Length: 132
Image (tube, rainbow, N blue to C red; front, side, top):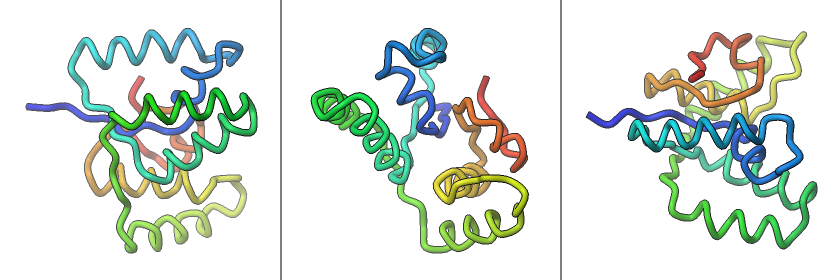
C-alpha cells in the first residue's frame, strides 16, 4: 500500500532556500519520506505558490532550477467544489489570515484522507492532520 502526503509550499521553499530556518529540517524530512516510500503529492495551487515564492525571493535562476526538478513530482488538481469549500472555510475563519491556497490544500486533505506536510500553524487551526 502506498502512503501519501500532501505538501504545502513551506517545505518546498525551505528545500530551495539554504538560508530558510526550516532548510535542514525540510531536507531531513524529504529524505525520511523518500526512505519510507511516502508519495509526496503536490497540489497545483502549491506548485504555483511555491514557484512564485522562489522566483520573487531567490531569483529566476533558482526558480527555473526548482521548476525543472519538481516536474517529476505527482501533481493533484483540486475540483471546483474543493475551491468553493475552501472559500467557505476562509470565510468561516475571519480572525485568521488563512490563505485560499492553504484552505484548498486543507479541503483536499480532508476529501482524500491525507496528512499535510507543512510548517504553517494555520493547518492546525483548520484541524487538518499534519505530517510531522
